[in-house]
Image (tube, rainbow, N blue to C red; front, side, top):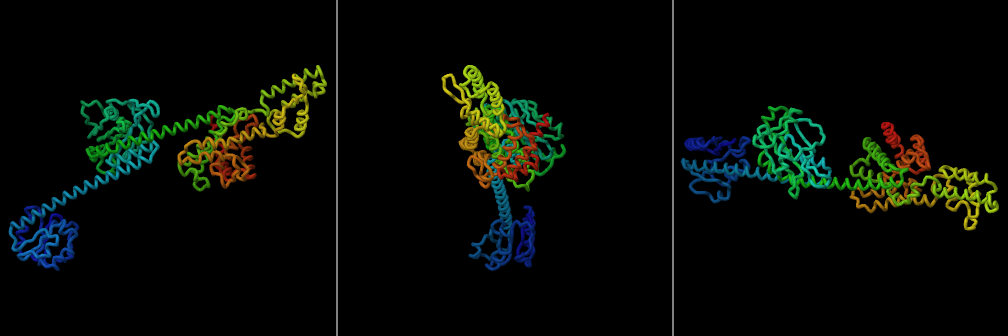
Length: 637
């Protein structure tokens, strides 16, 4: 109904004419429905500016009018009531703006209209204040949301995308970009160079481009803001004053046909007031959802960024800067930690060149397993790739599963023969000595002829190599262990020491029981070493997962002999991968390199023996994970 004054009840024609005349001078219309328009009458969607009631001023009639008139009548919509000489006492308790007697005088009508005008001005002012309060509350809410969101994000690229997105949305910017100030070394001092990191544009499909550097100088807008530490709010970059040193680049416009008009560029400063980055917001549009497809649309719908926009972004900038530095610190700590882990694995590889690269290949198989599981949601291993944290936990456990070998004596790790070359050379030298002694005093040695001695020499050379030993060879070795000679001190001693006899009688591999125990101890050492690291909660299970890779489903594994029910899923996978990688790896002193098909047969035999998990092996084969490094080798060749 707008600027309308509604007359209630019967009004004389003279009073109505006077009201209409005065109202028209002040821009109001008058609506007089008449006496039939009683409580409950239909008014338009907009409330009138005031009500002037000519009805009797009795409690029943007045209260009934208030009950049926629009909500706010009296408080927000002035209500004037006709009286007979005196104001009834009950009327003072009601929100009545004024009282009048009839016939109306011009002065009374003017006073009523001025009261109506004052009320409207007050309402408009209240609405403006309410809008301002709502805007401030919304911005405060946005600030809280922004601060909360920034505090949770540690990935630097995701963080920058988030900062740019929320700032663009808050000021209705169509596009924007962020530069990060470069450092001499990670965590080191800043250098005078900006690295372009992320860009967003609602109207142009821009692919993620490569990072490029921009010098911090006064020639570019971003460089100027970084060098001065002050924001720039440019209404139209095509009309930059020629006296200013900087210019906007036209490369993007030429490449995408997208014109940059208004631009707000803000420095991101840390707590030490150092510029750590630059935030650029481009083309403030009238509606956030609007697409700017042509230069004409940009000219029509793009406006300058307001001082309020600038103040808001400047209030967000310190939060963004601190968050960037925190994310960079997290990235640096992660890189340092991973560097330490890689150095630890490299130290093991240096000690045992034969198995060099084993841990990284096991990790490669493990991550390929997780990727295959994530690509097939219906499989029983899908949970492994459910979160980045669990994947990372498995990755570290796979990489570090053999770190306990750092405590295993090097001679055991690098042992190539059943008896070391140095010790075996001593035995060969003793045989040479025996040959001479037999010629001088044949009765002093157990060998009846030079031929027998040479046959024993060849026999020892043969069985010192890794491989299975036949029963006949074991019996002959026992006889050889009983043969003696007289040493230089005149003592009768055996050719083979107790250790040599035990080592040469090994039927599989090249380790004695004691040496095998030393090797097996690496699993418990892995647990002990990794438990010393203060892992964050998401990585807390790394030590146990890594240490269980030699456990068996039936409980016959080590170090704790637990069964499959108590093993981590990741450990079951590691157990199978570790066996397979060891089988197909490069030739080792105790075994030749094995074909993948043969290695898979051994894995399946281990499944039948209830040593490793059948579902793991089945998935490993079905998804072709076992081909990972053989395929890479083929591609390389």
